[in-house]
Image (tube, rainbow, N blue to C red; front, top):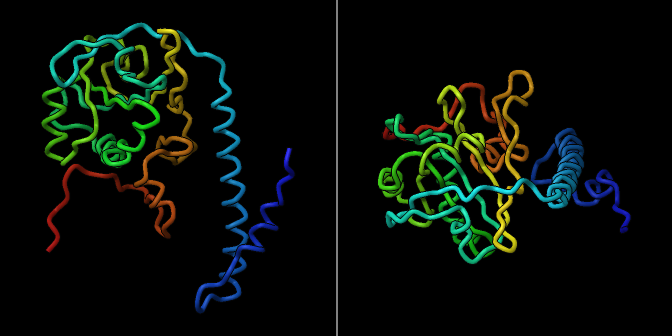
Length: 234
């Protein structure tokens, strides 16, 4: 195994001042760079541990309605791939409009999904009819995401998208298919794991919105959330 240089050593070698940096700023930035290197390495270790998971539970061939009105099984959502990523979003029939947080995530996937789908299949699943999901998608200008509607609530209930009290929750899941057998590979299991004073979030959070805000002085803030529409700027 290749021995890695210490993060502190790498940071010291890579750290270069920007115009008019103070000595205090550059010292603090170099120390932060070492932590960022450690974070990157930790993310890589977690990803390797995730890839090494043993086979998950075999999944039933849940039924969905596609954009043409055809009823298809979970197996068919894979298309030509052996890996499928699904995102269950909070847009059930009882909702007048979809969840703004789900919308922010799907909006961030609209263009990258063209590249992502070269490697894996990606499907957006909701409890509302596909026509209703598509109407909102077209309103947002989305053209690349594929939408499916659940047939019944078994899928949503069994894979943590629908709570016993009827509340919906977003669910990001990864599935594998081998010799016709579909297994659940990974799902975000972070509900109830937030630290004190912290909103629920993934680790790492897949939403670019939050990742970019984490780079700024104000961070995510304590009471700001994305909305479906904003007042027109004057």
